[in-house]
Image 1 (cartoon, rainbow, N blue to C red):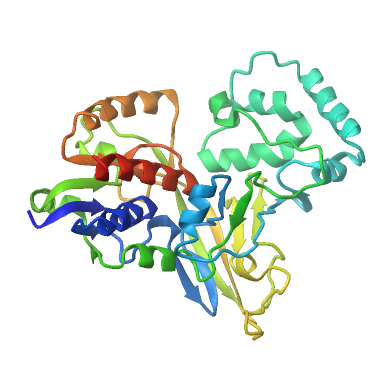
Image 2: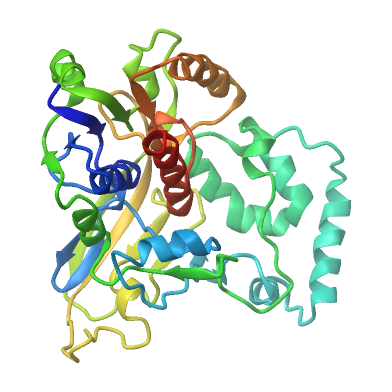
Length: 377
């Protein structure tokens, strides 16, 4: 046994575990099937701009412990997530707030907005929502559903809203204030210098092997460490013996534009079904905000980098991004989880290892919890 821990995957969960274990004097090997560290939060610099290679990652949390933990490795800027939704030739603020309602109905006061939503909910007369469409209409009314929810959701999940379970939208954020801040969390921002720099610091002092697939040499990797931290798909680990878990995948098209400012916002959602992508990300706006195009030294960046994000049907060989946590898949996962709980040598973590849609701050919370259980034992 050459290592105390073999860590499969160099994303946030695996990197935190490696960092904490190495601090405790444990010998770790991190293997990563991609040609870079960082998993889906990987960023790379293009034309002086940190590009989020696998979609927008905006850090947010109300957990001061998590915030302080991350600030060991980076400084955060003051970025506030205020996405814009584009429906045909109309632009709306997200999440749904008084700016949105004013644009849709011309209302000024919270009472007027509430009355409009209540009127539409009453006209729909939905008492027990049977699917996502009915659930959304029962929460925000038909107008908002038709313009800002329906097309986007159908693209995201690859199904008609009538064919999606209601629990996918348990609630929709509705704010009766003029506030475009998407998150309610106390702390939020983008790490200055990108996310990859954070992972590099976490993995200092740890052996890392890129372009290395655990399953291509499984017997060897299982033999070289006392314990394995596995952040890949749990169903694949168990050779799909209870069936295959389902995901949604994504496809990204990134383009350099020879202009200073393409869309005026970091994230613009495209909510009509006829446009195949769900959003366009303009990476520059994550970093520079009001000082558009100006790096801290004052130099102007006369280019911009945009990424179109396309939802994609997942199949083996494609990257799994979003677990399909419906009843069918959750029942399958519970069977795998029961096997995982009996493991003496393997620890499962992250979105794929636990088949759970984790935001970054929740991955950090969970990773630290697992670290404490394993390293304090």
